[in-house]
Image: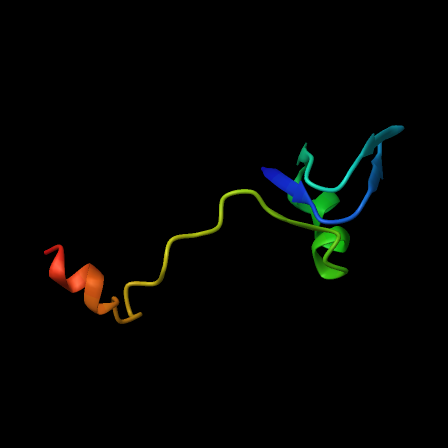
Length: 60
């Protein structure tokens, strides 16, 4: 999965600076996600249980 570096990340002898995309396995990403050094590049869609905004309702 692809992630966005929120801090400088050294991975496999490559330096990824803030804002860089980095591809990692879930095992590699886990400790970096925990300390917020990276974030998923594509955030998940909102949950179906979340109420849409009034603007979204107007577009129906």
